[in-house]
Image (cartoon, rainbow, N blue to C red; front, top):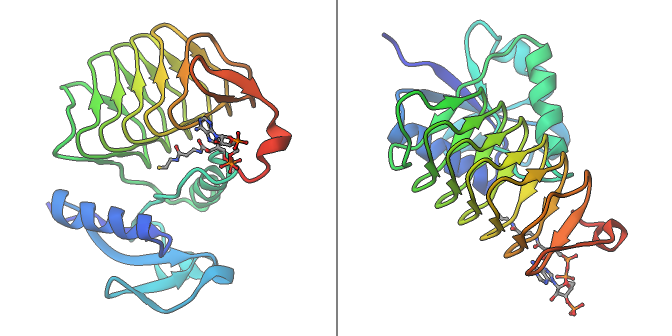
Length: 220
Ligand SMILES: CC(C)(COP(=O)(O)OP(=O)(O)OC[C@H]1O[C@@H](n2cnc3c(N)ncnc32)[C@H](O)[C@@H]1OP(=O)(O)O)[C@@H](O)C(=O)NCCC(=O)NCCS
């Protein structure tokens, strides 16, 4: 079977990481990058052509390529969600990347446009929605449910049966006690230890985590 031809969104360091992982640790072939034309800084990235996203459906139509959108958590994952939904409405399909160095099990349920990086552990009975990123060394324990558009940073630990709502962000090294419900668009700061359910759009910081004003965190 021939390799799936993939276009990677972005020309950032994170896009380079995704390109490297797909190239060295998947059967896919990256053929181009795509960037919003307003953010184009060059026509080549990692030796491959960079196509304006606005022109992608002509240059690389949906029946010829699939996409991978490895964007970060800007606007609490809203930007990645928006590009994913735009591309989906244009008829694109998406690959997902699960590192060969991740700790995963048979019957893993992962949606489309997901990236599961090296040494992440996804235990049996965990479920991962669409457009989810789980960074290196994160632990997603048994029966966790990550809704779509979630970002779990490196080294975060989720106890068993944690549900994480759409677009939530879990920071570097955060700890989430077993059984919690993390509401949609919750922002859990780096190193926070979350011991109770969160409220939608809340920003949580510290040990034990407390909710702080979002107004003080305009940069998220
Ligand atoms: C919570 C966060 C958004 C705050 O960012 P910010 O608004 O730029 O905050 P500042 O760096 O100006 O710090 C403001 C105050 O909060 C404290 N603070 C910032 N982040 C903190 C954290 N994660 N835990 C505890 N305290 C924190 C600072 O020490 C500072 O305290 P002070 O006012 O007493 O000096 C940010 O620190 C954070 O945790 N981002 C997530 C990073 C991450 O996990 N990235 C993933 C990369 S893949």
